[in-house]
Amino acid sequence: MRGISTAVDATLCLLLVSAAALVLVSADAPAERSGNPAAAVAETLTTSTAEVNYTLSVTGRGGVSLPDGPRTYSRAAHDTLTGLAAACATGDVSVNGSDVTDRNDDFERALEREFRSLSGGTGTAGRQVQVVARWEPYPDAPVAGGCTLGPSPPPEADVHAAVVDVPSGIAPVRRTARPVVGWQTYDRVADAVARRIVRGLFPPERLRASLQHRRTAPLTSVRFRRFAALTDANPGDELASDDLAGARHELAAGLSATLEPRLGEQYASPDQAARATAADRVEVVVRVWSP
Image 1 (cartoon, rainbow, N blue to C red):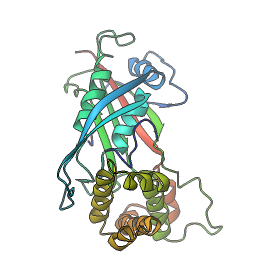
Image 2: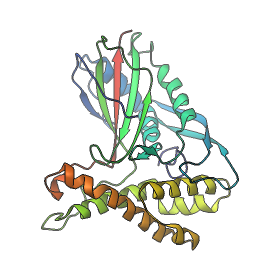
Image 3: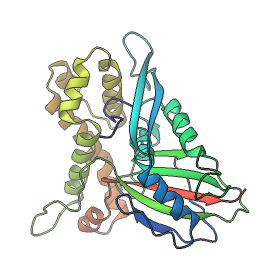
């Protein structure tokens, strides 16, 4: 991934936008300004880079603990500002509202300091800025990640907003080859989504390297086992025998079983469910208003 690994490192925000339509832009092609100050800020965020130094503290969660007690790690992340916001979202994943790992508050605080410098800077003319990054494999999915940077605007504020789509590092579903007859069943869609999420959050080579390194092994193990516990997966035997491919398969199977009933409830057909997937993207919303 970028300067921060979701396999090693670890807000939902209702976007109440008034007096301005959302402007959809690409991280690779910044929006035209068109008189929208949020679009101008979004353009700056997609082209400006920063390095963020932070401390990651891990204590374990939900019955999954570190064998030698809490650990603290020094980390650095380098990317565009929208890329860092996206990494913040994918590094803070939850399942059914329960966090996979401890929230990385220090990373968020370091990012907020970077974004706070935009207020009063070039292109903002003294306006306030908030950035909200949201990752979910499809709308209202039980597994998702989010990050909110900056204050929320007051209810009476005249808010301008722009949306930037940023790659999440997870492979897409809807652009992959499908059977000629379509997806046929919801479990096929759920399996496809689950496999890509597990591969994106726990890349095979990085997972093995992390588990073999004495500094990163405790954190990676806690994250993996916590994700398994939240999806009712049971990769214990595979992890004990160093069968990481089998462990990831178990994790994907548990996540698929979590996703399948929701897909059936939300979508009229498996093909419609597949078309709604967006695991490969993080939505970054930039909101600008005058104080």
